[in-house]
Length: 96
Image 1 (cartoon, helix red, strand yellow):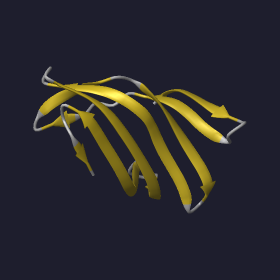
Image 2 (tube, helix red, strand yellow; image 1 turned 120 degrees about the vertical axis):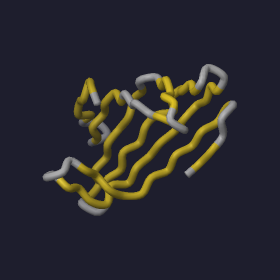
Image 3 (cartoon, helix red, strand yellow; image 1 turned 90 degrees about the vertical axis):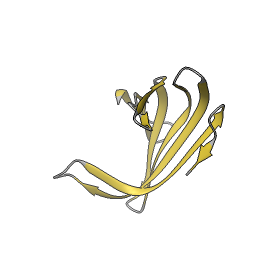
């Protein structure tokens, strides 16, 4: 995460996300993209990435989306847990 800032109008934290992803042992080249973290209550914390482009093995160009609902935080180990949604459109299709 970089360029982290508080957006007072929407009461959210906005940032630029840079992700290092791998699929089937091969790296994806993904664009840095805007993302937002919203905390509505201790039971409603959501991270959402704006759609961004990735490329896998040069032939697979796709638009990707990701959102994550945080259920728990382990500060000792630096981990987040929760439910996620991932979408891909283009020459590589998939959802989770």
